[in-house]
Amino acid sequence: MTSILGLSLTALLIAGFIWFLPILLILRSRKTNGAEKLFWILAVIFVSWFAWILYLLLAPLGESRE
Image 1 (cartoon, rainbow, N blue to C red):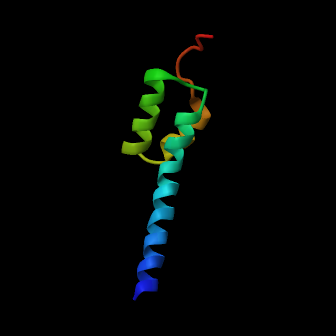
Image 2 (cartoon, helix red, strand yellow; image 1 turned 60 degrees about the vertical axis):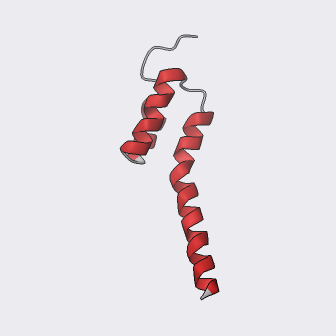
């Protein structure tokens, strides 16, 4: 019984990390900043992982201010 609980806890932790990975990658990215970065993170949380794929393809949305 204990090994089954350990396996399910490990699987849950791995799934949580995989779900959280796009958020970490957006936070560390230098493609966007400020409000746009917040928009992309909220899109990943509330829409789905497809928002992260769109982030990789479309970010930054506005003009670059460099």
